[in-house]
Amino acid sequence: MKPPIYLDYHATTPADPRVVEAMLPFFSEQFGNAASRAHAFGWRAAEAVDAARAQVAALVGARLPEEIVFTSGATESNNLALKGAALANRDRGDHIITVATEHRAVLDACKRLEQDGFRVTLLLVDKHGVVSSDTVRAAITDRTFLVSVMAANNEVGTLAPLMEIGRVTRERGVLLHTDAAQAAGKVPLDVEALGVDLLSLTAHKLCGPKGVGALYVRRGVKLLPQMDGGGHESGLRSGTLNVPGIVGFGRACEICRQEMAAETERVGQLRDRLHAKITESLENVFLNGHPTERLAGNLNLSFAGATAEAVMATMKDVAVSSASACTTAAVEPSHVLRAMGVKRSLAHCSIRFGLGRFTTEEEVDYAARRVVETVREVRAMPPMEQLALVAARDRC
Ligand SMILES: *Cc1c(COP(=O)(O)O)cnc(C)c1O
Image 1 (cartoon, rainbow, N blue to C red):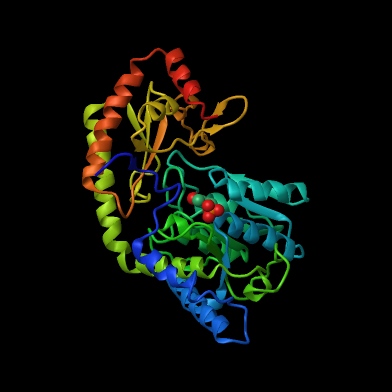
Image 2: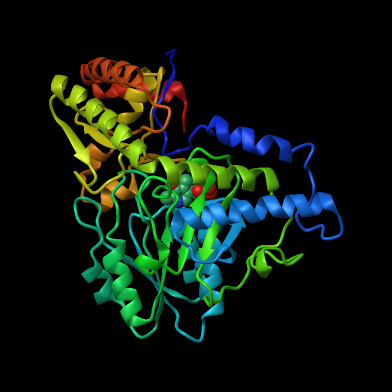
C-alpha cells in the first residue's frame, strides 16, 4: 500500500486490468470502423460492438441488445433521454417530473427544457434522500409524459424505490427514465421488472474506461436524436463508434454481473469498518444518506466543526470528495444534502468516501487513522484558519 489512497469511487473508478486487456487489440490490429460494411476490418469491429451490446444489455435486463444505444457517457445519455423524449413526445404532454437530488446532468437538461417551454416539477426527498412513489403519484398530471428518478445518488448513495415508482408510471402511462450511473454494476437492475423505459449508464463508474456509456431505450419509445449525422445507433446517436471503449464497457459489465454479489459483500464490510473506526474515535460525526438502502461503497459523513475543504486540504494522502461546488463568489454546499434537510453549516462539513473493487482493508485502516487525526487537527483550528487553509490551496 502506498499513499495517496483512492477513496473517491463515485467520481470515477480505475479500469479493471481485464477490461484494459480486452480493449487493447481494438486500438491497433483490429482498428476497423464498425460502420464499414464492405470489409473484414469493419465486420470484426461490428462483431465486437455487438458482443459488447449484449453484455451491457444483460447487466440491466434489456431483452433486446438493440435497446442499448452507445453514447459518450451518462451526461450524454441523460441529455438524450430527457431532451430526446421531450421533443419527440410533445403530443403527449409538456410536463416532466424529476427530483431535487438528481445529478447536474439531469437538472441542467431539465432547466434547458424549461427555457424551451416545458414545465418541470422537482420533487422533494426525505431526510435520507428518498423520494417516495406516493410523491411521484401526486405530482403526475395529464400533461406529464416523463418521470426521471436516479437509481442511486452519487453523493449519499441512497437507492430509489424504483420498483414502486415504476408501478406508478406504468399505471399512469408515463415514461420512466433513471440515471443509473452509480447503481449499475453495484445493485441488480432489471428494466423489465422495474418498468424502466430509459436508463443511463457510464463505463467509468463500473471499472470501465472513461468517455463511453449507453442509454437503454425500450423498444417503441420515441426519442429525437440530439446528434445528427451518419445515422449510427439506429439513428439515435450519429458518430463513429468508440470501439475499444465499447469493448471495454461490455467486458466491465460482464465482470460486474458475475462478481456483483461477492463484491457488494466485501465492499460493504470495508465501508462499515471505515465508518466504525471513524466513529469509535470521533464525536459528532453524522451519517448522510439512507442507513441501509444505499450503495455498499458509499459513506458520506458530516464532521461537525471541521469544514470539508479544510480537512481535504490537510489530508492530501487520502483522496475523498466533498460535494461543495466552488462558484466564483462562495463555496455552495451540496444541493443534495440541502434537499435532505442537512443544515448549511453541517453540509459544509461533509465528506464523501467512495470504496470499490480495488479498495483494501489496509487502505481503509490507513484512511480511518488519517481522517481521525485530521478532523481533530482541523477542529482545533479557529474558523479563520480553516478558511485560510482552503484559500491557500486555491481550489476555487
Ligand atoms: C458520474 C455521473 C454522471 C455523469 O457521467 P459521465 O459519464 O461522467 O458523463 C451522471 N449521473 C450520475 C449519477 C453520475 O454519478
